Length: 480
Image (tube, rainbow, N blue to C red):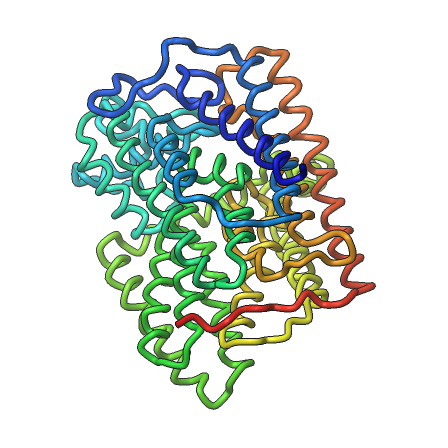
């Protein structure tokens, strides 16, 4: 009965998400103009209240469905995975308008511009058919992504041409391919837990809706990190060099993926100090082989915008409350610096608490690196000043490492609860297209309930660290 219940809930959740993606422009779905040779939309454009209720219900049903599926995890049928992939390609991205940014940055590169210094609205006088489709509030923001992401965005822009919808659809193919590649890597990283992999990655609406149906670049960086973690589960130096290439590509997509480099280096030293110099050297050589040419091509200023954006504080974090309550006590730039430093300290504490609770028993080469990556990723997603629902993808991917349950509640349960609340905080997804009543409800959740839930997560993690229970063993077999 429970098995049938989780299937029903997950099916209902995915149906709602795909329906929103198939319908016309809404508060959850940015306009992309004429569809050209890409799939179009159904003629009905739902109102903001309707689409908000539908997306919120989909997240709630999906969260409950994932909890139930973890009671009896089983591999997903290939036909179901194929149907979900096709559905993702027939819809338009939902939940944000970030995909219009990616299209614009690729378009600027294609036409010989520099997306790391030119804003989308500033390109071609604001009249370009692709860059002019960028939605608020990112119309004046240059790229915050790395040069490897820029190359992939350039490819999508080249395929899509002068049509925004076509560029976005080309990008969707990349994202869906990355999602399927992630499953392939995870099935080899956790060969004895295929059901858990599919429950937390393949058929997880909290990940699929934000990462795949939202068409976010974070999914590409996650897959690079997973490839690196798989490759270091061997003693071969050549594999460590290839792991460096994968990790370097991940960092070149989004700099926060650098946690995998830190984790692998630390794990190498802790596991075998004699072999560590050779392994770390190969890893760094592989990473530099990607990052140095990429930055020479794009320019060393590619992360200038990232340096400015680190002062941003998202509404759904406790740090926003701290910033608003402390306004006027210090100059604004100083206050933001203090809050950023405080958040860094909280991230360190959360990572240390995570690590203390796990007390990993390394059963195979690479276990320490994997668990350190999970600890750092979870700490960043839960403790940073700027956090969004699609920042959790590496956490979801590595959660099978810390199953089964711990004292009736697992890290997976904690992550499901946190991710559901955070996803609901960003329903319907765009900052425009809402009625005043819908905006009041969604902003109320975002400003008040989501920060309180994040604080609760901090307390749970710290309480587990103070009174640790039996460690969740790490059980893998070495991949062939």
